[in-house]
Image 1 (cartoon, rainbow, N blue to C red):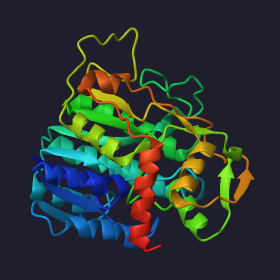
Image 2 (cartoon, rainbow, N blue to C red):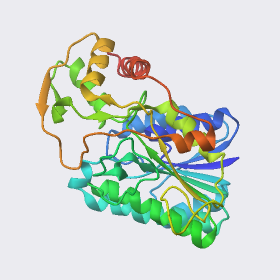
Image 3 (cartoon, one colour):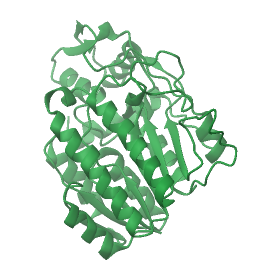
Length: 335
């Protein structure tokens, strides 16, 4: 297939692009290589993909409508995976306009490009953040998600609503994937595992919010990518059992689906730190702090719908995943 991957120089996007190439697909990577975090890391990810047959790259933003449309017109993708977005819960408190530009305006441009060019399937990144103030665990795609606690979360919920509209009006098959705390090699420097590793190796204290007592459904990047591939190959159709008198956010009378991709095994942050300490062979100096605005105490993915429709369940343990990250980090940064 010809697959357009936005955010191809990003953490998940670079891993996904490699897997698509490995199975023989043609990939057009699309990324603006912005400086939200170290662009040299993004370039290093991209440099692994550029020499490979079947991979092409366009440097541009989703908000740049002419550039995006030109990429669609030249490459003529059959399927699209939209991973480009302004990420980060905390940064959305500082720079809210970046989230509207990329996650709302940019996503509308993606939807329009897919609609007018007969794309077979659009898969896009949502987030576990959409569950916001929900407290019923595990989080299910059948649950209402109407109480976001950050603009980032609100922008991801908006993506799901926008996608549904295009599925309903234009019969565009769309699948939204709610990722749960992704980690692994080539990860993002603004995420806890990367921050903790850098500071611990430098002998600096780490900031541990909520005194380390919140839990996260940490999900290894290879498991996320496998989930993306399974859903990309599983084009949604209208749900024949959909009941408009008892609606569910998870499916529709339109070709639309939403899935959680999480490890289905929440881990307390303090345990996550202990595993990292074992892998690094050093103890962390912990600066215990309260929960930050926009953060939620716990995340826990119900993946029954993913298993039902794709036969896949993430299963990499944090012991395995954190070790692989540490091995990559030491090799990449020569520490």
